[in-house]
Amino acid sequence: MENNQKEIRVLSPTAILGYGFPEESFREGMRRKPDVISCDAGSTDPGPYYLGAGYSFTDRNAVKRDLAIMIPAALEAGIPVMIGTAGGSGARPHVEETVAIIKEIAAEQKLKFKMAVIQSEFEKDYVKEKLRKGDISPLGPVPELKESDIDESIHIVAQMGEEPYIKALEGGAQVILAGRSYDPCEFSALAISRGFDKALAIHMGKILECAAITALPGSGSDCMMGTLREDHFVVEPLNPIRKCTALSVAAHSLYEKTNPYVLPGPGGALDLHETKFEQLTDTQVKVSGTKFVPTDGYFVKLEGVRRVGYRTMSPAATHDPVMISQIDTVVEKVRERVLDNFRDSGMKDFYLDFKIYGKKGVMHMFPKTPDSQSDELLIIIEAVAPTQEEANTICGFARSTMLHYGYEGRISTAGNLAFPFSPSDCKMGAVYEFNVYHLMRIEDTCAPFPITYMEF
Figure 1 (spheres, rainbow, N blue to C red):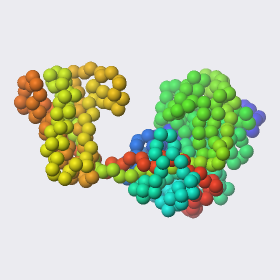
Figure 2: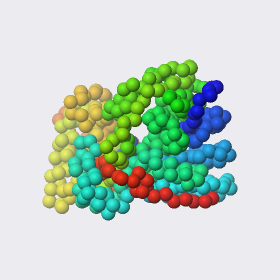
Figure 3: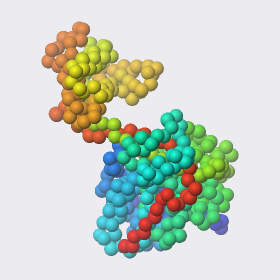
Figure 4: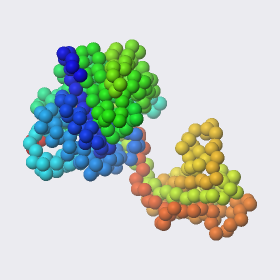
């Protein structure tokens, strides 16, 4: 599009690093001469396990494939690459694994560049000090943070804003790899560093971090381009099978938001009350009017997890209409039998659950949801206990008890359950839960997020 306005173009290859993208879409993006390639690499959506275990929820080979295309293309074009929330959760193990992947790519393709690595994991003593100063408060309906919570945490990370990215750019980094980040900041940092409107830069980042999910048909594994100008920005997909509409882009304001008009982040919130979404062409949408409202103080979101035990589960199915009609009673009787059997064994500190798919498996946490009806049920028997061996024992006993439980009207005595796998029990390993989900006030927006540089 011909335009004499000052502008900056941001290429978003995929919704999460490792989700992939069509190479032709990416090449089309590079033909548009972007000023930066930016990509979000993580999320808390997959739950607390990955932060606690230090593993990525995306496949290593898939991440390497994406980076092996993005980094050489950026170096050839003379533009930076910015990756946020490395390794899926952004703690030190996740960042280090992504650094190792980039080292492999640099060696295999004989690349030369300067990389900045920004850490976002905090030492426990630092968090305790901030807690004692009164700088930490709950985020939403969670309890006040205690020092014991900090001690129990495996990893504690914070969502950095765009400031550490800008500092890394000023340090001459061509590739910026960051730990846990506020999702839009790897998309907005370059624009903000060049004096563009902060509200529009962050809002465009909010949209681009999900890549073509905002388009129709939506996809988390296809490319998007954002063009930021002085008083608006334009977003468009780079695959001809997709288009952005004013409705599809505006609807993204509802995506994972408690309030579609106020989108909080480090240092302030976006105000969308006066935002306008206009259809520019068949595939492009123009966005304007977004405001940035600073907060009284600069706050970052803390995320921490603790280990609560070990999980074993057993999936099984039933097609027996008699059992299905009594499934709630059967589950409670089996639960009572398990509790009675291990009452005096010392194994009291365990969690036993039965998730019934085909009845209310997805919505079981909402008791008032009406039951669905099915002539087949999938039953997930889950046990969580302090050790893997105890979890194995509880799950195995619950499974065998349900398999042979004699409910009223039962005809077959061969077994009540059909097992899709042998062995029937799956040892799932450690279980984690979020125990730090709080806001922390910081004075220096960069100091808590140290930067190191690497030369390839």
